[in-house]
Length: 235
Image 1 (spheres, rainbow, N blue to C red):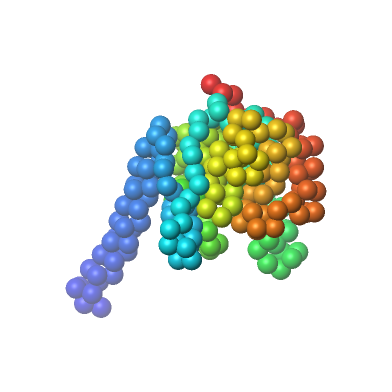
Image 2: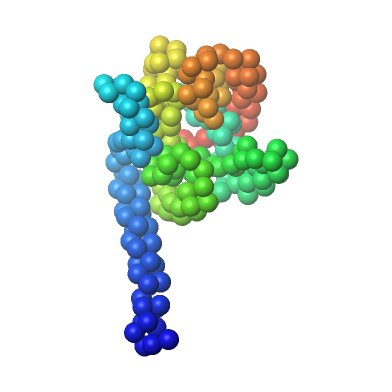
């Protein structure tokens, strides 16, 4: 190998490393900004809006930001009970949950569960894309560490509840409460909150199908769990 070729073999990995680090710094910069400001339209929202506008050019998202204190305690408890019961204890990753998801996937022979925490879901919603892949999961893990290192649990849950998808073009607790129950996010009852939490894994499906038997069963399960979980205080 000539000295010139040898130099290129050194430069290429360094260039790729530089690009990778630049991308991570870009993500981290936005993580710091959104620690104290409203994120606005997320990457996930932009993807969904583009999908909607391909079918209906005039389509718009339903989304209204509301502060943490103006979201029902019932919904906070329901989401943690449904999605991440150890939210207040872990540092972004639930190892027991990941192990159970791996066992379920192996048993079913396909990816049926991901074991993602609320922080991991938030990382995906803010920056990434819906399709599952090793690349997305790897980047999701890096952003999760960034968020957990710089945000409070209260802030993580606040942004998550405001940015989560709850139906076709429906994002955030306020829009979901208005769309499904005609009330504000602050006024959600325990049953309404449990039903919204039950919809999170397949929001577009339940938006189309309504109150299926499976949804009602899961709502009852979450209702039983809600008072057993801890949530971040209002202040």
